[in-house]
Length: 104
Image (cartoon, rainbow, N blue to C red):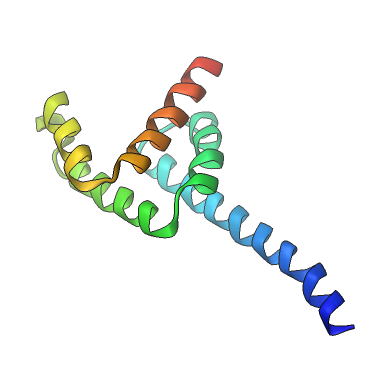
């Protein structure tokens, strides 16, 4: 009986954690200035494909960029992303952003 209960509840808990992670990503993206539709679109793949550690790294980089975004060149932003984020994180963010932009 206990085994059945665990096997039935565990997937629900994992889904709830994923939904919470996606909601937190969506909120962070909106705080960074993205529109609600764009943030919602990007939050799903980012929440599913990125680990909590990768999301924290991304949050740390976004805080650095927000300190003086108008003073940073595109090259400086790209250098910051390459220096502080792993290639997988950069790839997920770029794919999510481009996919959502194309879908409109």
